[in-house]
Amino acid sequence: MITDLSYLKTMSGGDAKFIAEMIGLFAEQVDEYSELMPELLKEKDYDGLSKLAHKAKGSVAVMGMKEVENLLKELEKLAHESIKTEQYEGMVNEFLEKIRLAVAELEVISLQSNHD
Image (tube, rainbow, N blue to C red; front, top):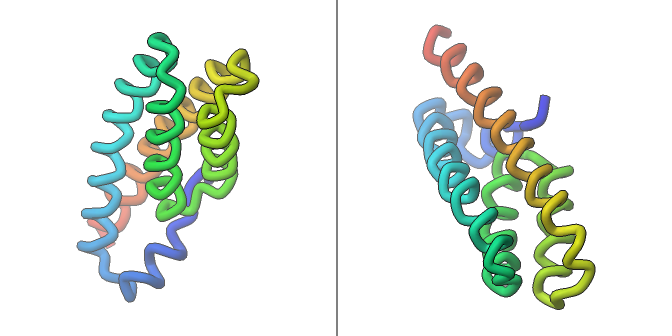
C-alpha cells in the first residue's frame, strides 16, 4: 500500500464521508500537480517547482505517503536553491507515478467503504 489513512481516520474520528471528501480533493490536486509540475520543469521555473512541491507535500502527508513526502521535501529544497537540477526530472516522474498509483488505491478504498 502506498497510502496509510490512519492519520486521516484519527483526525476525522472515522467519519467516512469526510474521508471520502478528502480522497476526492486529493484526486483533484493530483490532476493539478500532474499538469503543472512537468510545465514548471520544462520552463526551468525552479522557484515555482519548489513552491508546488511544498504544497504537494501537505497533500501526500494527509494521505500517509511518508516516502513521497520525503521525496517532495528533497525536491522542494533542491529546487529552492536551484542545485542538482539534473535530478528534478527523475524526482518529478517518481512523484507523478506514485500519486497516480495512490489515487487508484484510494478509489478502491472508497468503493469498498461505500459497500460496507
